[in-house]
Image 1 (cartoon, rainbow over the protein chains, first blue to last red):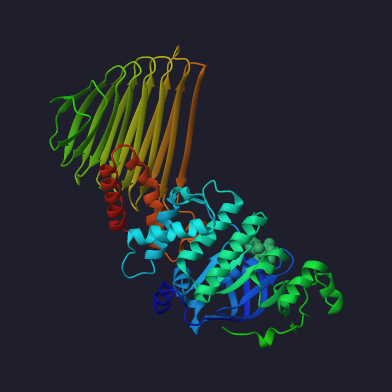
Image 2: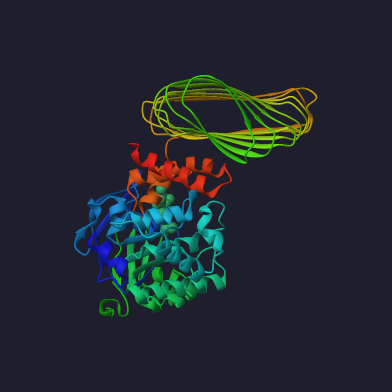
Length: 285
Length: 258
Ligand SMILES: Nc1ncnc2c1ncn2[C@@H]1O[C@H](COP(=O)(O)OP(=O)(O)O)[C@@H](O)[C@H]1O
Ligand SMILES: [Mg+2]
């Protein structure tokens, strides 16, 4: 609750999400095989890697999706044990996941949904006019149609509308650490800018820390990552700074296997963790 | 007891078992607030070209049994709705006769089922160019039972008629405690008819999505539930009534143990 209060004031205090030796299984199959990652407020971490290597699994496990079983390791947010929290407690503690596939919920309007989500983290329900002002502000900022508030949640939304709607939710819920899973797919170039500007604005206003999964360098160029990681076969193979994202955009993932003598398709436990660039010396705040 | 509806908006309280007759000779919205242990018989006539809307608002915690018959005349339209949030035992037997060309009959139900509930709703198309739409929405609490028989019948010669039904029921019990029997009896070729039905427990992916935004499981189920019930609030074209029903739905859902 401490956090929730801070969040509603605007600027977040400080946030550290720490993942240590995280192993995650789905239906008995191990997908993540020992992830170490630390994210602070004001940082932007690009999380890259070929499809099917566990990026979404990592983010869903952090959020607490019931299908993903953590078999080993720890996740903490400002020292609090995230793994012992329920999904809603994680949200209230300051975590947010903009999902790759947002759910459609016919019958529940966007505004009722958001109001309920905001009220869940407040002691007194938000005043209606305040809520409307905030929601309208976010809808306008993301250049969505004004009727968005009254439509059923993601029901019949285009792919791009769903993604923007995730950001509308992030705007109103003001997390301290947000994870955005391919939030830019389905967006055209103009929409990409609108979304990136909105995310950057929130980061500047609140000090939000971000983990961003994307396949597009353009999105990373706009968001200016401070860190980059390549996740392959359930492990973070390479970490670096923004130049790593750029390099992957121009050269793909092949160079990783050549340069570091690693077979990208190998399932064997032979990966080393390699550090590139200014990862360790990243700026804070 | 006989009512002739003369005002555009009327609100009638029913608290005793009796036979009631109601005639609509002009467009009107009527809300019927009913309370107590009731066994009532209704007969309603909607005159030619008249648009009638009737909303039954249940306030009873006792057993309520109704037998209802509706006559809809030429180019007239009947919309009737049951707003059942009291978790009491209910039995509605409802017959709608679309008697002349152009007649329209809509039946909507919104139910929080907390006991034994039974709806037997039959809409008969007795003339060409008639239309019906039946929408049953609701949730079923643990240990409750709900039977729905929804019949749409289009007789021979009633060409260009349409009969549609939708049933969406959320059940909070793992046991199979809901029976939905959609019946479409069609004796004419040149018609449209459909039935859509969804029945089941809350979707885990939807719940997870809502929880990831900070609602706990109970709050998430409540919000889903409100989504099933809220459409009933739009039946009456009056903002004050809508708000009243909306509040009532939210209050009742919050009181239910999900
Ligand atoms: N819900 C799930 N059920 C079964 N397998 C899953 C599920 N989610 C992910 N996986 C498997 O886990 C692996 C990693 O998937 P994912 O995390 O979605 O990768 P990425 O996001 O990097 O494309 C894949 O082999 C995928 O098939
Ligand atoms: Mg993915």
